[in-house]
Length: 562
Picture 1 (cartoon, rainbow, N blue to C red):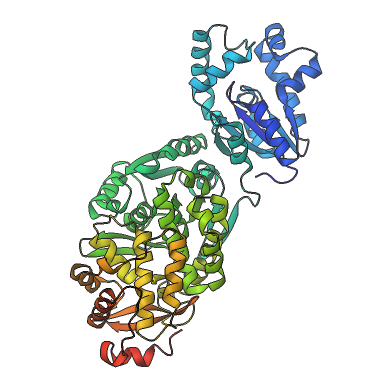
Picture 2 (picture 1 turned 90 degrees about the vertical axis):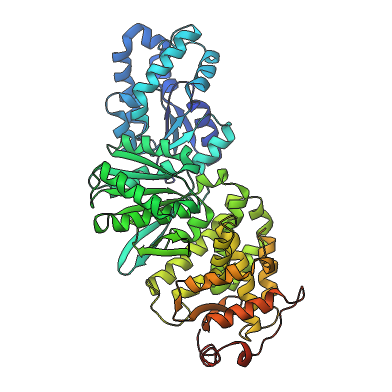
């Protein structure tokens, strides 16, 4: 949102509801609504329709521009301007400099329905056919100017939704700085849709050329973003990726490389990835490898990607042998989290993303875990405002860990980056073995459950730790019954775990909620213990003697890791 005194200006086509929205938004914000057309009519003593007929459009636009400049100097206002006002006398440049400009956009069919009810509009004509043709012509002429607005809002929605989208959460836009191996970039959490990132993207598009890679599942957000970027003078090319885990494939990566070559993208051009975690993973790897590295921006559109996948510079694709086996560390120049994209996320995907937030809190922050579980009912209903504080806290923890241990070389300690893999060792195996019918977050949740059971069985975690993990995940609507997934085929995938050194895995265990450790375990012993757990009576976690199931190395090191 604009600052307390900075005007908010609403622009858009006739029929987009600027005047009505200005009144409702001003009431919601405790501001004063001003209508440019009405103010001009009051000053001249004639309606805008009369002014246009008597003096002609050129004289009308000159008067309009003069009054607009005066109104922009008035603080604390919500100003609705006529449809043509931004397109004359460089008014859009003036408005952008003095106010926050919001474009109310709607399809011509919606605009026509409204203008036919509004009455006298001399620039549109009298009949339905005349007004439809005029609206189509004006939309083609003016859209590029409107797209220079700071934000775009769907004006075909009910007025309360339009106001809520413009107003956004009271805390507005938040920025978290991330330091990755001496490279600094921002993670911006924005209440609006992805198109609101247009100005920020333009700042990083040094050559003016943008390669926009879009997850097919969020293609509806791509066109508005592309329009907003083009209005800022950027040359944007778009490539649609399949989305989901099938995007993380060498064939998709090769397709991206070929496409980049086809359009002549170089190492100084900008790549933007819009979509879920799989899309940002493969796009980030493409950016890391194209001409030995080009700048890129991650614009995740899922809870899971916002909380984890897009933060920390990891990029990767999968192989048949396992997940994320081919990758690189390549930090983006910006991560933009558009909360406005989350309402269209399917319920299962939304809940899946909660697992990554829960994972971070389980290993670092017991108070945050408790608060997350307490909000479980609201989160299961996909309430974005309930999600927001937990997402902010998870991002802050991820940023802190990444800054302390960017390349997983710290070796030990409370900010060892390897701790972020809690639940991943067996979770990845479950996910791969399911043919990715399990969502990543669901697999992580199941991996957390068996990891907590293993931690108790190994004598590292107190009794009851696993029950707390399971209960919390169930409140969040996540799966917790892993027993049927502990198959020989799934356990064989541990041999390809990227944290494996020789035959030893860096298993992430819990000591207690909010505190984890790295326990080196020989893979055969972990497999044996997982099988014991999977066949144990329901509701029990057998205590397995370390001397029988684990190497002496685990016994020696697990007590001093933290």
